[in-house]
Image (tube, rainbow, N blue to C red; front, side):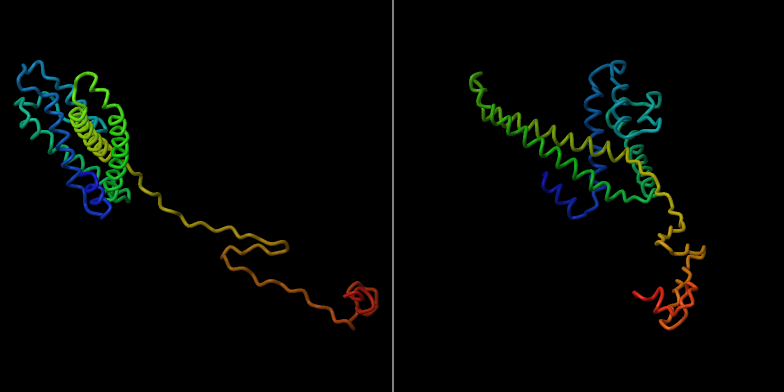
Length: 235
């Protein structure tokens, strides 16, 4: 199951429907935990349910639901009320990411892969620790093999729930800032010693080359001698 999930991501497939399926499974689990249909309506932990769903899926002052708008306190009725809002919320996040220049499909793959890898490695370590200590159960007259299978399955289910919950919570709260437009500015010109500054139009003026004095010409120092017998003697 884990490696198939990784292959789906690494093949670059669209996992948006998998993300929404995870979201629906989290809602089902929350309803099962907080909404016990066998107790009185006044004893239902609606505040706990609302807090969990709001923290996982919503933000910016939004709430999963208003208790006053509930007409029927059943799991199906509440799910029918909550799921459309969750889908609408995710569409809003996707639009905001696109407006900021991001790719929500790619973000989904990255977040999912990171969470799968991290939880899977933690699970492998936990299973190794369980295997090392499971033999002690025999002292309590319990079958170590049976205990290992039962606890291993529970740990796997806990890992899957962790992947699902953290992936969904991260994706429903993705926030990207739009990249500011780069303004073209004049690039500073590095001058060598003796160079003239570049003009404002960016075109460098032609470099001035000093005129060479002929050897038989009068020396430029004004001595009256020929250049070759004066300053140009050692040239």
